Each structure stands twice: as C-alpha cells, then as structure tokens.
Length: 403
Image 1 (cartoon, rainbow, N blue to C red):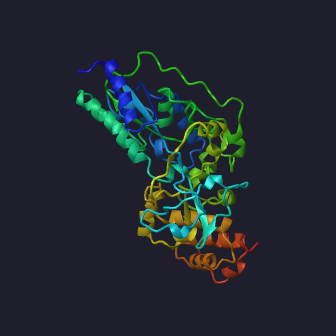
Image 2 (tube, rainbow, N blue to C red):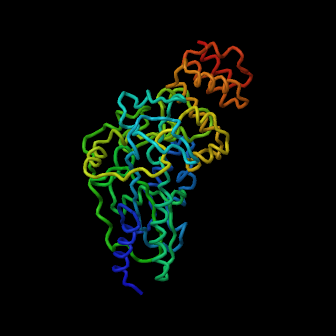
Image 3 (cartoon, one colour):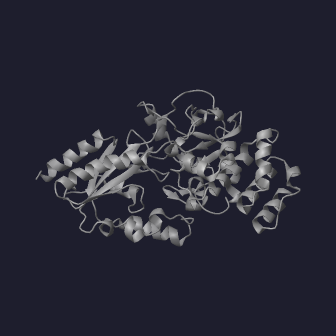
C-alpha cells in the first residue's frame, strides 16, 4: 500500500492532470459554522425557498452522514471562465443545431449601465446566460474527481465524489482546504484567479488530511465593496451575506411568478447573473494574467428570446437541459424570457409583437400574466383588450399594466 503522504501528493497530481485548476486536502469534520449560518438564514426567510444544501443542513454540513468513518476531503476547483469561440455580432439565426449557438460574441464586452441591452438580431432581442451555464462544466469536474476517487479505491479506501448534489457545502470545504478566501460577494476567491470556478470534492476514509489545519488564505478583498454597491437588487446585504430573495441568479431558478419589483433589474438576463463577479477587481486583475480557454462548440452565452418562446417543451429541454429548472417545468424558462422581452423588446418589431400576442392568449396563467407585464413595459396596452383575466395573477398584472 502506498504511504499516506505519498498518496496525497499523487492524488494532487492526478487531479491537476485531469483538468482541475486547484486542489486541496482537509479533514472531513463537521462544518458547524456553516450549519449555524444556514439555520439562521432559513429562520430569517433569506433562503427564499432555495433548497440545495439548505434542504438538509444536518447532512450537507456533516460529511460523516454521507460516508460514515470519513476522514478527509479532497477538494477540487475547475475554472469555467471561457473566451468566446468567435468575435462577431450576435446573430440568433446562428442557432443551427441541437446544442444551440455556435457563433458567439462576448456579452460582457458590451457597454452600458445594465449590460448588452441592445443585443438584437433578425429574430429579435437576445438574452444573456451566466457564464457557468454557457456549457457543462460539472461533468468534466465530476470526471476529474472520479479519477482521484478511483485511485483511492485501488488502495482499498472508500471514496465518494460529491459534485452539485447538495450533499456538501462546497464553499466552506474549499475554504478549509486552502483554495481561497470568502469574497464579499459570497463566492470563493482563488488567489490570482478569482471566483470563476465550479467546486467539488472526494470524500474518503483514507487518512490523507494534513495533521495540522490548512493555513487560511488571507482575505484579498480589502476595503473594496464594489460587488455590494453594484448588485442590481441589493441582494448582498453585507459582506459575504446574500439574501436569496433578492438575488437574480436564484430568482430565475425559483418557482412561481418572477417578483415584480425585480423584473426591470433582470434586464436581458435569461438565466443567471454574473454582476458581482464581473465588477470584482480581483477577477478583472486575474483575467489580465492568464489566457482563458476558448468556449467549446455549442456554448450558449446568449439565446434568442423568440427562439426560446417559440420552442416546445422537448426542444427547450434539449436546448437548456443542463440548467436548473424548477420541477423541470419549461414554463419557468419561458417566464424568464417574457420578462427579458418586456425589458429589451422593440414593440414595433413584428417578431416581438407576434410572440407577445401569442403569449397574451396562452392558457397558462403564469405565462399570460408575464406577457401582460411585458406588453405594459413596451407600451402595447392596445394588445390587452381581449386578454382573459379570470385568474387572480393575470387580473393583477392587467390592473398594473393599465394604470
């Protein structure tokens, strides 16, 4: 059997060769501080109905529940920051294939106070997608950690890969393993690389954790508060403290109507929000020091709103199946698209008008109500005359649009 220290070093090399940008090893004791924070925010209602690690904190903050006898966590981070595959104006008609657009522009390169709100093409407005969802980054992360887990098994140790399955608080694990520090935007910031990472772990009963705790990475945020001041909805209520009820990245994933008070703030964001990361000086400095990999074929930095609203459920599932969608109900993707349409759609565009008219007659009150809001935002009250308002939500939206 390989010596413990030698095995730990070998596992670090395996992870790096497999595509992990950063790796660390720490003990697998309970994350008591994280559990306390989770419980406090649930009591305060700040989880906003979010499940994930909030669902069972007694499990997600105690690795022993997942793997009795666990001794160590091998934590890996994989960068998801990618540069566009091609620099050219956005053309929604380039979405010619089952995986979406193959010709892209970089949405974050656009200027303006709310981002690329003028991104339009032959089929109307274009909605942004958060960088981590441009393509699947969790599968290669899981595969890389799987190689580490398999090596442990060959030595006779039990191991389990924990990636995006709600069984472990991944940010506290990354901090304990020395990968970075907690940024004021509540993300883990890796020295010289920033926060553009997906995180995962291998939980094992192998005694590979250092005998002394890993030295904490010094806080590199300093006095900067840009992420707090620039958050579109004020979701960062204090350094490191996120109120999910106001966070656009969560609200596009939450069930029910999109909160009316945050619809304008959503701007052109179809899925996710990168604002606190885009504004972060640590991230900007990091990007000047290394060359990101190109985005892979089929990456989706944006999607044509009319394309989303014109697709049936099967087509949408194929297009955005890797996104987290409540209950796998595609109505929530359409809901987001209708808010984006209301924010950036051109009321004189025939494609926009036809799409809006269709949804004003949709049998689903959730979608009909959001279409009413979009029509009101675009000054198209003339389209509301025949809208069925029997549902309370639709009735409220009609009253608001006609004020």
